[in-house]
Length: 366
Image (cartoon, rainbow, N blue to C red; front, side):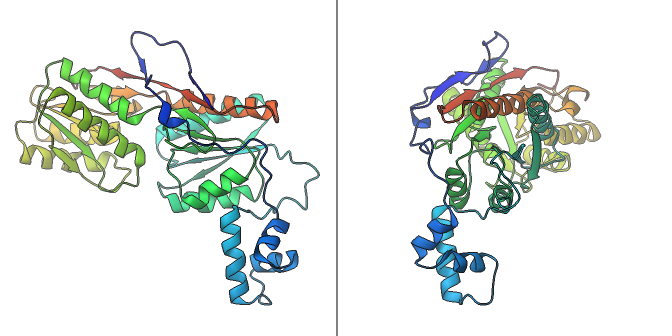
């Protein structure tokens, strides 16, 4: 069974997601599970290793039915062709692979910087990929990276395709999921509950007297963290006994500054008596703030605005945006530190969930 710990002592001004966590302890990848080999694929498919090699290289000598059978076996076993095997004399490659949803999002850039800074202390390098919030893109990147045999993998979020999970479970290297608390972790977790963080924001605003809440998020479920924040918003309203609804979905995630303006206009046209609007992140919240200024809508006197993520733009806007700080840089450093610990531990290891802290920063916008 894994172990849960928080990254630091809780302060009065911040709250970690100290929940009841029995659902986070499912079955884990057994420590020391052997990595599937080409010989394993050949044995399961009933062919020679040469045929497997040719099939994976799209050699025309392999018939279509045989190639399809081999590819099915590859998927079932989670096998990844080792392109580094011919040039390496040991399993030490000196690099860690990390995937983020976006490289132009300052929050994930901060996380990547935290990973890089911590890896540098151990003379490890970072190979960074971005998924554009696509599980299928993540799967392709994972397969490409595993072919180069990284010493560990750091992921953003806990939602992956079944094939991605099989590949990572079979890789026999440390895997750390961040920015989330998945119900069935692949291996290690360094993250927080997005649902609890948004719930805390709404409860904080309610304590200030707000009762008519609106919410703006994306139009699809491809941003699983955004979906969790929406759930936190709805759960808070339910616990407060307030009317649900007043939710506007605008733009394919990740929604940004450009989406905030039209979203808040739409929301206020539908529900003109709305007192406060919570946004899935600070970026659309900033766009909404600018649109309110253009329309001479006073913030927070006529409508209050709150965001999520503590982006720099929200700290220097006027008025400054009330938000949730999740310590993006710290998530990266803690994930890299845990991965380094696992590499040093060798075969001696235990699964662990490290809870990172979050806090509401109250500013002038709400």
